[in-house]
Length: 287
Image (tube, rainbow, N blue to C red; front, side, top):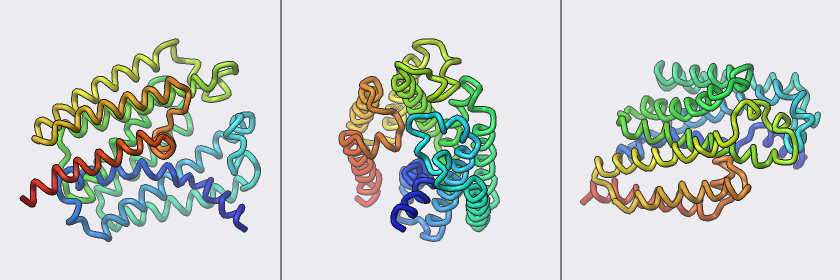
């Protein structure tokens, strides 16, 4: 029974739910976090968590023929045969309905954002993931939609500099992940890891990661200065970006959620950023 539960949990990929914390950026950075309605918090996060799990299940179903031959993905519940395709598809549909219901209970604007996320994510799984560059921006748009959804859910405006910082940070993380996948593909065909990788020229991901990392540092620095925040947040951000680059270039993996969980320094940087930013916003407002 325990192993069966783990199989279903693996199918849902709960570690990827960490990405949905982007929904909390607007109220947290807008100084409204402690005024957030618990119902809105639960409904907004649960809707995106359910939707993202549904999207991952559908992606696994579509990729089953390719994943069977993958050294790691072949152990996933669907390609390994532990969960039947029909059962997985039925679960994905149920999750979609539940997520839409939770979103509709919040607002029409939030529901529209969720539907846009589902459409773009499934279009990515169906055919866009095979189109160079477009596939990167599909994932980046997913982060931006989460940010916008958080703004709608909690009625907090999103500044231009925050939007740009999230956009460039997402681009940095996605290109870093692709570079990591290329490194893991050394000695074997990249086509087995991710077919679209062969469509990119040598050095593209490394250059794109450096450009995005430099740009996000600049935009975040402007955001910090514009909001008269703690200037020490900028070197902390720089350290975090370089630590992620080090992890990718060292071949330790580039998946953002796994990196945050498995890389102690990145986890410390993330927690420190939350504490420093929180103190900067909420203690200043109090005193």
